[in-house]
Length: 137
Image (cartoon, rainbow, N blue to C red; front, side, top):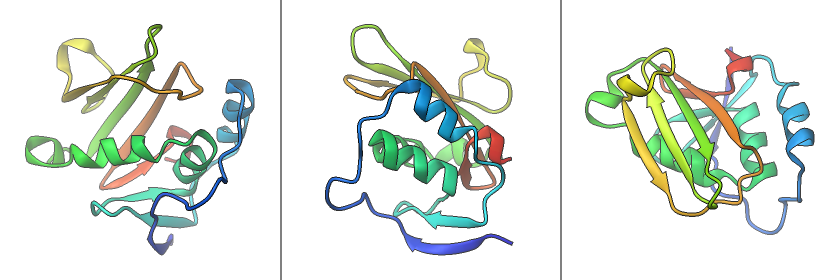
């Protein structure tokens, strides 16, 4: 049973370190399951792997973006795949699907004008209100 921790606000102070894409990918591959869930201020929960991603990549904004879309028909979907694709011009696209990624069946899409997110692409899954890395499912 996962233990819940109080609302995780964006950390205070400089805990984020510059991380290379390869290092971050290797670190994220180490997360399988989660013993602890963190509460998001918009009401969702997220796993240790997602918290690690947010801490290391300065990506609490990504968690905020995903949970900000949890209303209307999006909220009714128990299994959501969220993909962030970094664009060459410095921005990104955030897409959501109800199952398998398919451009013709987007549940939601958002354009992000600028990001220094270190990975070219990442998938996160939102399953029954818990945001996780695919390896944590």
